[in-house]
Image (cartoon, rainbow over all chains, first blue to last red; front, side, top):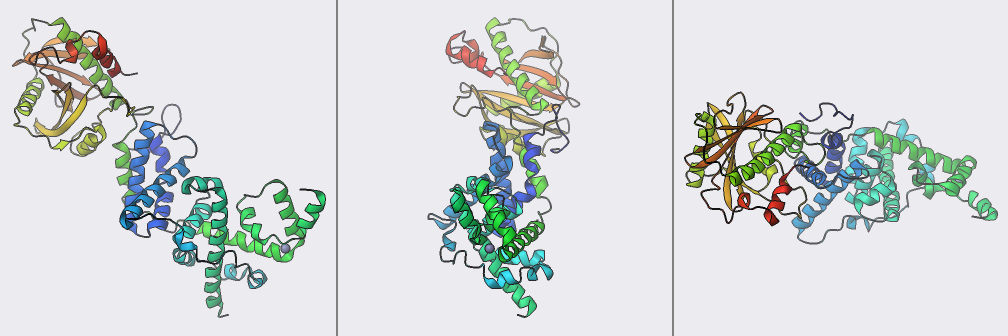
Length: 187
Length: 286
Ligand SMILES: [Zn+2]
């Protein structure tokens, strides 16, 4: 079985190393596909391509980012095929107001939401309600801890784009969570 | 940034830099200016605290989705069936590869030497079954169950069907290099109340059968014994077919071909030197 310790040199095999990211990849796949069956397929296809790729040449650099990039490419290609036209992830964020949510109201009561307890379920609902491109960067940055440059690599876009997208995604998330907090507090 | 500029910047709210700061993406002067302002500005400090808590709450919400039961097993299966051959493939795969290569090399030596006499030692039952399998395949009496030139696909197809684990080697690794031999496909065959693997290769358009079973089920015997690199090969000619059997790492193999029968001109094993010889050297494990 895979996962039975390490080899003689004390190094993990590539199989063991990439298997460690299974949960993270599934989470990312769910954030893109929002469908457990599709997400599972995406993850399996990712591992298949990863191990085939590793056979041709061992990946250099960050293994986790490499796996995420593979998964994302598969997803984008599937979407392209399904839609029969060029897909631009992020096209759904153009209409959204940017960086508009740092209001005085927020600053005066920064703790309110957290005092009430920001439950996992609320975060999940808020995240799922975000446009895909925003949801994606929040997952990559806040959940998986990728740096901006790693995210740029995964997304295949400039770091500046990542920066502004994360800003806008967080602003949008704050806005949605504030709405929830307003409802919760009856304000 | 000059000193005057820095003074001015300290007095500007830094709200829009908060996500960058929280994400450790501010450095040098930018970071120092940000911290200087935060320490002096209650509203930016409050916003920073808010952002920190938000990020922490999001991070702590991980994982949002439980990984489905069984997914790990499915992925493990995928990985097992696609072990990279380069640096860390299993010792068994490596040995199969070495053995196959050695055997093909032996066939070269053997066919060039043209032995006219094989000792009259009764061939093993496994060798007889292997020859029978190959013969029926060449007569189209034994259709393959999986047609593929991909060793991974064939290995995947065998996974779970055999009482042992079989991984076919892939050579050469470099996709741009032409393969000296190719896989045609495979099927299961019955041998002693269990399944054995039958894999058909093609070398210069000529079929070669590789039959594999467990060493506990069959042990090679008979024919001409040739020790080679720690393995003992048994050569035999059965009904005009050439068969080599050997055991390695718990598995027993039989390789059957008809090189002599099909003449020499098109056969790599009969060529000495030149391009084909080079190809044969390419078969050797590095
Ligand atoms: Zn301020």
